[in-house]
Length: 478
Image 1: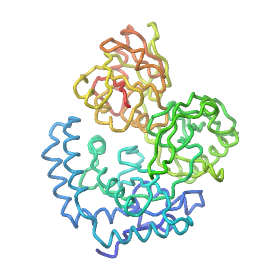
Image 2: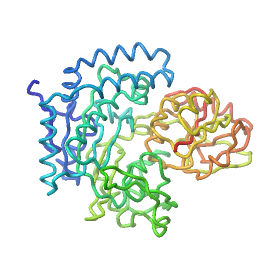
Image 3: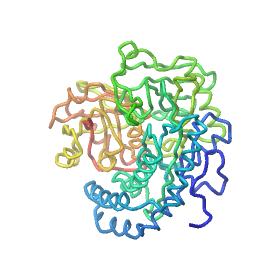
Image 4: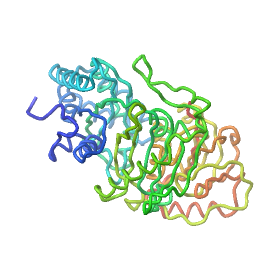
């Protein structure tokens, strides 16, 4: 191996190390240098990934597999290619000197935490991730509560393999990112014992208002919020005076917590916490202030993941990336919406627009493969990044759970797809095969086709920077 660094500690990376740190790693490295509270950790660099790939002769095999199996860009082609490529990577050996470097860094992180084996979060940091024009949100894997050096190395390999997940392959093609240029760094950080966690935007991600900070939060680890598994609490804060303009406290049914077995698990939210705000007003203002200050440093609107330590009350920033729709000029120009039909479902407008289609109930990706057709509606409990290949051919998304800052909502806005989230009952109210009008500008779904909507939705699609095929997706996950 050359003199290129295999491991770089957060806060010690230099300007020339940015590519090696990946999008997430470079941003976290910058935050540490700015004095922002960030959980301590290190990055297994993209050079380490390249070293692993070259040592096993995998680069050419990966590209030839993609060219052989992905011909028409259909979701099942991406899934077949991903399965073959992941098998290649997971069965390859990590070079011994790289294993030793990772083990040494993990031992040092554990020592600094005064633990024999510190629980860590192992997260992707792709070199194409967190661009201002494409968030790459959720396209690679994250593993929480990883304990022990062998488990850390295993999860590092899993993250490397997720470089070629079906959704990542499709996402790169959608945004014109060559697979040959894709590499992967891996961030390894001490896992915060989260009381609450969530996402903050320093711009209203739906309306584009630059005068507002939007914060979404729920109990426990933040994966439930970013993954759309819960409908989170939401606050909208005025930037000018830090006053809370709007507050929505949801009924929170589940939370993700650490498991003693070295994993995470979903548990029911205790009854006394279900409708209790997951943040105090003071904590909301503290978060908003952090977001505003970071936006000043970066110079553009941000998408920030954060967590609140149950032990110390400290707020930690665990990810910063650009807001990729309004600040990049990709937002749809949508005026008005549908009107005149019978409203059957209401939810949160997460990506504006109007569309019409037939509902198809899909519990799994297999269901989506067998049922989805152009113009159909897929009905779901929550969105998940695994569905990105199907989202690409959709014109709207509706879910029972999730908030405006979930990864799937972010991707919907990037693709210009109307999306309604957090309806609470779409999966039980909407009927398979029936026609509905989805008005994602106002967060309502009408029975049947509302007069004039088809022409309106076509006009809106023509205005969108990214146009999609005419499907409506609402899917069930879990």
